[in-house]
Image: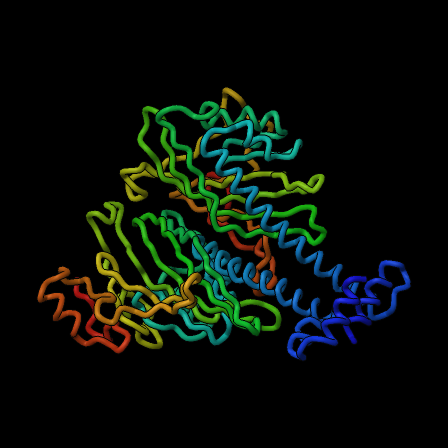
Length: 238
Length: 262
């Protein structure tokens, strides 16, 4: 008969006469709802970044820009920071015409996600590994790799990109490889200058740089902020 | 009130086993729900742990990398042999690959893909099969992982890292160039134990056993005793038949032998 009693208690709960036992049941339900929502948030953020990659790959700049919050920022390598959805939509033309064109390959894989959702479920951070395969008309193909450190915001129940920052690690000619070719990053565009200079000064391979981590050490819980950067005399980093 | 009358009818009419299954209290249902939520969180946690390992490898954060392991963890990468304990994991990394830190002129990205995570029924152990795709200044590499994880004090850690190699090549590409598997004295430091199995990398092949059964049929993977790792002789030749029968263990892999000679 226990089931009937607890069934009656559950019915009573909705009427407001809340017995002590039922209260803890409600507390458990609340706790589990939170945990399921955080799992759903992490999935949504991972998928959002995948949507970004699939749109960006094909030069669907309108769809790409629509994934950003109105006041979001976009930063790719040393090109500087573009702020606001409209500015981002235009800056994306730096990567090719809308819908790309024959001879273009703009593949930016979105891999190895480490998502951290804020306890209140309103914001999130994500680190991704970005393997790159590029081609432009009149140029040889290129291999590349880099790291994304992005932030996200949930507005009206929908996750959007609040800031996207792609740190280029290394780029090389398709045929030559890193032993013989290290392609430098593009600087800020003269045609459509960014709103702000690059937020961090660094060089890609053969130089080395460690994009700051958005998460704490998963085992020790310690901050990863103090990890020293390799020296760069030109930048002034000892 | 259909639920009440129905459950009353069930209690009256049905056998005790059926009644027991039906008569879950709210707390029992919540217990079951919690176990399922925890399992999903655990699956995420071990995937995340493996990805964090990859990011530390990329930039040579050996100290932080070693802190991902349990004190009694084991590590085995390629044909190098077994390293026992967290301290030896750190020693292996710093001796073989230099002090902590990203280094000018060095690219050694170990991109972590394709995880298949599983958690034990009691929630204390986990396993991930996954791969790394290596993009380095020297060329390309394809290790696999069959790793084990343990939950200690509510925190997941790597308790066994097993990273057998599939293929390594220079920038000439695997059509023209294939590197041998590593072996215990290829570089410092020496391992604590010899390799748990000896196998050959591409153009030969070796299948590291799967920690899970086939997800559709439920059948466990059975290593091919006759041919695993044995394609270092041309298939279909007498040479290969001899190679298949030489110094083979019960599971089809080869026992410890002399290291490959370049």
